[in-house]
Image (cartoon, rainbow, N blue to C red):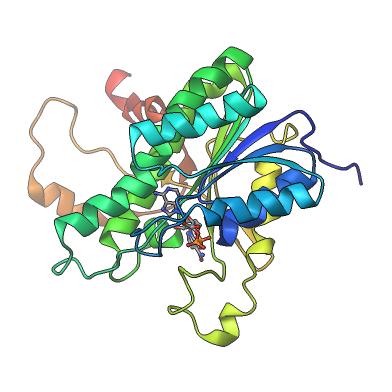
Length: 302
Ligand code: NAI
């Protein structure tokens, strides 16, 4: 088996002081990458800050002979994102890899969710990924190389009770991926999204202990590292991963049906009567971008 390494590559991992991010940072460094270990060091709900979270991981990498620099900024501000990228440039001269991983939880049912709970979760997960990716993308474009991994969640892809803020942010990251993938295509910038399941402080009280103990974050790490490698040529894809299970999810489009002729009005009853065809998932396809959906209107232009 030929080994994958990251010699000469610079990786930014956000939220790398604990959980999944920490495993990525250690493995990237072990395989030759220079790593920016970003972590605010706050609590699970996003309050507080502590520089020790990032420092401990940097110390561990250096003790093992690797190269790393800490960054303590929050991803949730534009200045924070710029400073994280600046940390990479000041210490290692460039950015090749970003793992947008930092995350918090403020779970509430939708009726009880406050504006602050909504705003903060969107700010960390969604704005955070934008604030880090945007300044790095400019550099990646100049170098014609980039590998970006966003972290979504099954809660966003498939739904979960009490996580309207988190689910919306996580699906927002899928939308961000699609644009970064499309805009990065001609510069060899690949962007993919993962939906992991792993034992961490975010999940310790939501999973039964017998399941929790089988979900070591280290099982997600190989997928992230592969997506971040030069060998990976895929982009714009979503992957599930947990405990050694790896699979792809995709947003698909059904063939549906065509009512009317693009000129006459369409009655509500016509939609009702065609409902089985409208909702059918027969012949579903992954579309490469929004323009592909115009293919379904071909009948209009015949
Ligand atoms: P974790 O809580 O162990 O790690 C998240 C890290 O992000 C923490 O070290 C925290 O200090 C840091 N962080 C939080 N806000 C930050 C900010 N504003 N700026 C910089 N750093 C910040 O959680 P875990 O489980 O490792 O989660 C990592 C990512 O994976 C998150 O985006 C989470 O939503 C996602 N995820 C995790 C799942 C799981 O089963 N553990 C399931 C689905 C998604």
